[in-house]
Image (cartoon, rainbow, N blue to C red; front, side, top):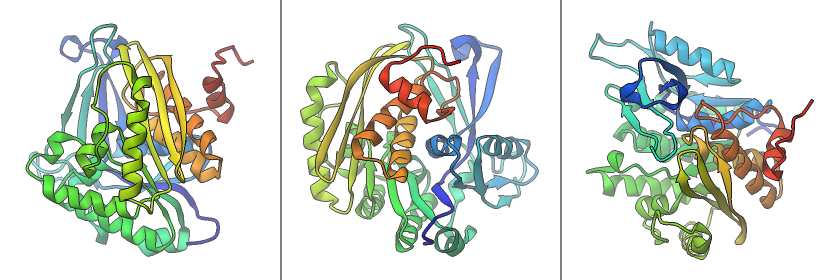
Length: 355
């Protein structure tokens, strides 16, 4: 890898569109919707790309599709480069991009999300579609970020992500893996996916996930999911991370978020980071929520931004916490910081007007 890599962060992903009702209304009662580009992995990149660092998504498109053109335009507007072949749709019942239909919830009415991924073109990603020697060996990538969502999307993407991580690691790229376990993706494939996730985690430098992710994706025992009083569960999270460190000694960073939902408009938000065996804890604090979807991706993006910049672990954790808090104030499912100062102001609780 070059001494100064071109890309701060790169990721494989399957791009899609998110359709959200206006004014926090329910999907089933709405007639007016807003459409944006989305994927968990590109959402993570949005922190670094917004702050002026070049990022790259490896994906796939459909020839002549207006949705593909929309996604490409959105990625350009977000300062995210993309590479990926375009393939014929194959008729009305052929390939397409995923549709994520979601409302934001309000008060005691929680958000509801409906994913429609039939025929998703990103399920067919393969290594022969990308010039990895050029991308990782010549241009250079500081961090390759993978998500359990894309790794578990299909048998093809599982093979693709495992091989991509291995090849990137060979060029000196650091590997970030957000486990992101989804039961519907794993049904009937538990044994195969556990092995794939183990392969990726074994060469990862950064492992991220909540209590369910570590337990269900990697078999690491931890605290029970859900419940109240997250602060009281921190010791349980630390124990889980200690087990993960023993199982995956190549990783330097282990991170998890802490969330308690008081209502759709207000959460308690915290995070834990283990860096070289030393724990850093951001105690849960109350934050206002416009749309909770993407808060975890914002945290991951902020954390990786700090790692890329070479910050001390505590600063990485704080920046990640604040980027997650920023993401849930936006109707998009990704955070778009104006500058680093805005993020640090969120961390310090400074909401005063800036003129």
